[in-house]
Length: 528
Image 1 (cartoon, helix red, strand yellow):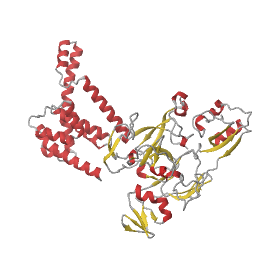
Image 2 (image 1 turned 90 degrees about the vertical axis):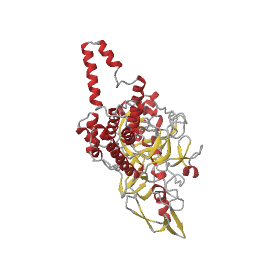
Image 3 (image 1 turned 120 degrees about the horizontal axis):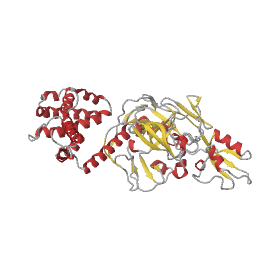
Image 4 (image 1 turned 30 degrees about the vertical axis):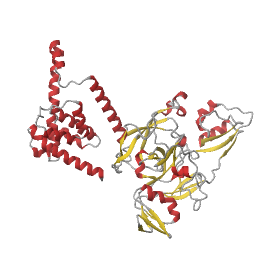
């Protein structure tokens, strides 16, 4: 709502500034107040055709069109310095009002037509070989910019355009962890569309452009939490599809400690994270980015039985590269051929201990393998002992971290759990509060109190809570090496960033020194 109010107020101020400015250019003042007509007259004043104003109706594109028109209008009044164009870009209504109120500022004519006419004189002198006239035209060129200004404006425009595209349309990401290994590998560089699931307008506005949440090398956060704008999302091209990967902000990453990775304050409290330095708080759009598969969408009931996901009672369509961890023991006299393993996709990164040579410890190792890799390994080493690793219950690591209500849940045997959708009513019980308490209090901004077994939300006693947005369940294909919804719960709709499109570059095991995965370049990121 605040964004809408800001835009409405800005348009009103813009119309008033045009009402004040138009008479200086011989245009009836009232035309500055008439929607549509004001932009047509504006286009004519700078030397554009009236139909050019129609481009202002195209979302996203209209920002660039408006900015260019604002700059050209102040230039049509003889304001050619960098400070004048900067003022028009920063806030056009103020720049126009200042022009209108200064009696010294006069309308000189449509800048684009005048510039084109001057350039035509230069072209004629060049074709005619008139060096004297050409030199004179260059020296007296009122539109000429210094080399320094050309560089500054080019850099500013490039940064603005890149930041704009990154913020609203497409952003590049790199896969840093093996949680989606096989489907999306460490070292894969992705383009992610922010338009498919609805463009999310910026919430954090005071920030360094082209950075997410950290300043490289120097350290520190790359933004200020205030001032901020409320959450708003434009209409989506499509909905998040079940079983497809999606990018989102880490839901629980609002209060974190930074060590070798981000650890939430709650993880540190439960003894599964590393505390280092001061506590960092982050708004929604500055939480860490995660990419997982949306195995469950709003309204689904999910259960995991022996590693297999069931959605609404039906078994999942198993992803081609779903992986589990295995204890693998080779006989003492068997040597490992790493090149043969690499051909079936088993490399140093498939070890539980990171990027190292395989089978260096008594010919045993822990490997993360998909079904094809498992069968391929068995064919290569038929005498090997291979056993899938059993996952123990651990309430400190497995959501919802409740020894009282869910003591036996593991990453392989989990649920059932219902994934709420907008409009659902959740019965308020102690058990449900362990599952949905953070959803109600943090993601939807309510205060929950319990007094003598009675629940109150924002001071009002109630037995039910109505959900305000859709939620999703995210899991990595590397089922034994993925911190996902099984560790921290639901993904709110307002945390969704975008849809992965394709891999535009890929390095082996995340290190270009190991080579380039040529076969993965331009591969679709919508994986089965």
